Length: 93
Image (tube, rainbow, N blue to C red):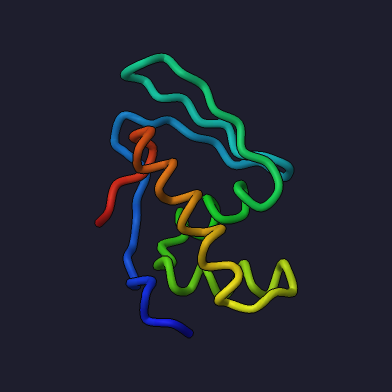
């Protein structure tokens, strides 16, 4: 795997309330009162981060789930993480 993606770990922001069910993840940013719903791959990625997996492990899991190379899935995971960090949903540990 390329070393361009550091093995960082993330945790949900302390002002975030979230619930994982069988088909989706429901999130509410309590600071802004803004809801989010994640389905499919984004929900799976959120679940893996909530289990404490670092970004490199999540890339490996996405590669298996999508039957793609880890190089191809790095960009998918990077885009999700960057958006969630920008939205204040995740913070780096």
